[in-house]
Image (cartoon, rainbow, N blue to C red; front, side, top):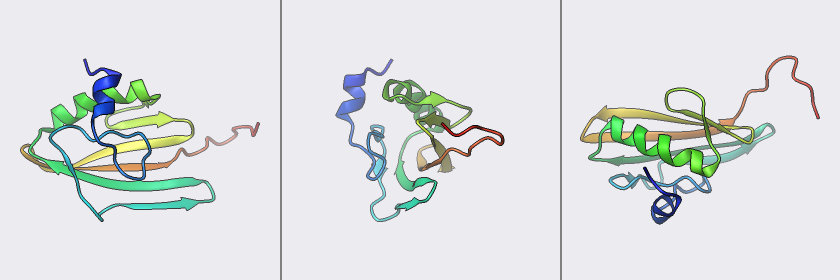
Length: 113
């Protein structure tokens, strides 16, 4: 299991705040976007490396809950009104991971506080 200390030793993906980049992945510079919308921020970033989808998924399944994220499906996490999604492109051993952060959609009929 990945400890909070081990996760903190990894570099963080720019624009996401506390999203660590798994060892074996390198951040793709100048490939991401960050902007604010009236409903919240939208952030997209990329990291690539000679890793497998299973290893990436396992790392984030273990690490993200330590940072307050709740798993909401395959490659999807929720925290404080935001959704983090991980998508994969390429083959194992030459994998690119796209990280997307967006505002959580409000459910119809949900009351405002």
